[in-house]
Structures are given as C-alpha cells and as structure tokens.
Length: 501
Image (cartoon, rainbow, N blue to C red; front, side, top):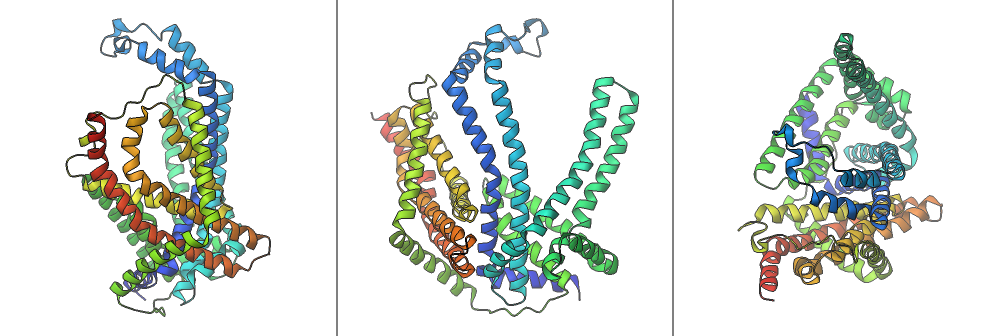
C-alpha cells in the first residue's frame, strides 16, 4: 500500500468521524492541563507570601525610584551598582521559601506532565485505532485509559529519560567551559551536541510507532518499543514515507503559524494543532502501522453533520443547565472563593491599575483578529476546564480558583468604575459560559469517581464524555458572541462610560 493511501485513511477518519475523535483529543487537552496545577498552586503560594509580607509592594516601590540612567549600558560611568534599597527588596522577594516553592512546582509539574502525556496518548491512540476499525472511539479511549495507561506512562518516562540523557552532557560541557575556561570544554560541547542529537533522534524516530504497537498488538511498553523498531527494520520504505510526511506536517504547521501570526489570529494555530494536525498525524501513523486503508465509515453530508452537531450542542447546553444546577452553582461558588482570595490579597495595597490609555482604540479600529483570538482562546480554556473533570476535577477547580483570584486581585487594585466598564459588557455572557463549562467538568468528575470506585459502569463515563463535548459545541456559539462584544463593543462602551463620568 502507498503512503498516499494511508494519508487518505487518516484524513477520512478525521473528516467523516469527528465525533469519535474530537472529544478524545479535547479530553487529552484536559489531561495535559493537569501539568499546570503544581505550578499554579506554587505561584499562588508565592504570591500569597510576597503580598502578605509586603515584599512585592516594596520591590515595586524601589523599582519605580530607580533612575534608569543608573543601568544604562551605553554609559558605563553611570553604572553605580544596584541601590541598597533595591538589593534588599530583591532579597526579600527571593527568599529560600519562595525559591523552594518555585523549584518544587516546576519539578512536580514535570512529573505530572509526563504522566498526563502518557495517559492522554493511551486515550487518543486507542480511540483512533478503534475508529479506523469502525468502532466507538470514545468508548475505546475510556478502555485505553483504564487498561493501557501504565504502558503509555512508562513509554513517556522512557522518552523523557532519553531527552535528559541527551541534554545532561551538553549542560556539563557548558559548565566546564564557563567555570574552568578550558579549551577542552569546546570539544566536549561539540561531542555532547553530536551525541545528544543522536539520542534525541532515537527518542523521536526510534520510538515513533511504539504507542501504535502497544495498542494494535496489545503488548507492554518494551514489546511496543521492540515492535516499533521492527517497523523501521522490516518496512524501511514505509518508515521513510512517514519521515517525509512528518517533515511536511512540521513545515505546514510552521507556515500556518506564521501566516496566522501575520493576520493577527495566532490562536487559530492553538485550535488547529490539537484538533486537526495531531489527530490527523496519529490517524496516518496508526493506519500505516496497522497496514490498513479501508475503514468502515458512514458518509452523511458534511453540511448536515455540522448543522446537527451545533444544533445538538445548543440543545445539550440548555439541557445541562436545566438538569445539573448543583454542578453549575458549585463552579460559581469556587470562582467566588477565588475572587474573595484575590481581593483579600490586594485590597488596600498601593499598586494602582488605571486601565489602558485610549480605551476606545485598545484593539484597533476593526479588531477582527482580536475577536477570533478571544473566541478561540476562551473556548479552549473552557474545553480544558470541562474535560479536566476526568482528573477528578482538580484542573477544573484550580482553573476556577486561579482565574477568580486574578479577577479579585485586579479588582482590588483598580478603580471600580474602570473595572466594571472593561469587564461587564462581555463578562455577563462570558463568565456564566465559563461556569457552565466548569460545571460540566464537575459532572464529569463525579462520573469518573463513581467509575473508578466501581459504583458506575464505564459506559456512564463514555456517555458523560460525549455530553461534555456536546455542551462545548453549544458554548462555542456563546463564546463567539462574547468575543464579538469584547473586541468590538467593550472598548466603545468603556470609553463612553469613563469619559462621561
């Protein structure tokens, strides 16, 4: 079979069976958000320490008092060193407790991220293979997470270990060169770069099909690695074709990122990457490894499927709001707790926030790019929080607390009229939509806990995942409306309110 046939199989799967694929890749984004939790918790603890101790306020005051000419690199005679007050303020900020929290947060996020990446790969590749075989991709994702997560997490740690082995010699060589100023250090750097590149390629290419092997051949991590290498050895033409396709996908991804960036809609890349390029790549690789191009796929008209999907999403959104009031109110309550925490930290501080100048033109005269980026970003945040419920709702709770604390903190240092003028026009639509998304996350968390304890069947989790997906389709329309108001109307309303007071 040709590479083109495998590409067509991957493309058909994504186009003709999106409801078996997209919910699972959105689920993967929720799983990967778990890696942010330790950093956000550590950041919140650091902020609490710095604000409560007054260290942050002192640092800002000292920075404002510094003469910029003191640090002018073009005028060495003006350099007088760090003023004693600023040095003391910096020492107050970088305390052992703050440094320890920062390091612990980074370390914990790295470990959690590796585990989350492994579990998400177990879900996505299981879904893709099942869908290629004509099965239920969401149900297969649930089974894959439950039955194969250990193998995929182990594979993720193997990849991380290889990258670590590739980086450590380079770091040591740079250290030797800088500290000892030894000529041999330069040679070590070159050698470590060569060795590191070889190990990095091993991690990227040598393990490229290990995940597919784990799912398709139903083997463990070492069996998957061995069989993945077997494809390279036994089917070199197929592997060469994969390399060409992978390079082409990277080139397309980079080109699209540059184009969207120039157009001012860079967030489109954040949507297309996890929901188009990644599932297409996984589907292509899975079809290639399984040596399968014929897939039983229903082919209703695309327009009918789009209308049915978003129409069903609006109905599911209304039904969820009606049928799950406790979950939605819980999201509102957690957010309110975050607001109260942020307000308690910043109320009474002297860090004034007056808002941007020329508010009416803050996004430009015709901010289409801003509108698109805001709509996509808000929907992706909502999707991550909703599907974060699969991790017993921890990312959902942390997202609500963090954003609530941010809102409360900004309110605490703002002129209330400025705050309401900048937030209220779109916030009255956007915030309730966020609460509903997080309420869906809490519902998913409840079902996940029940399934993990054996009190609910896995089928309930499959049903809950599909419900969350449909609710998010309905919320997409809401976020488009909120994004339009924020980009086109909020600046105008804020300018009228603030200049007319």
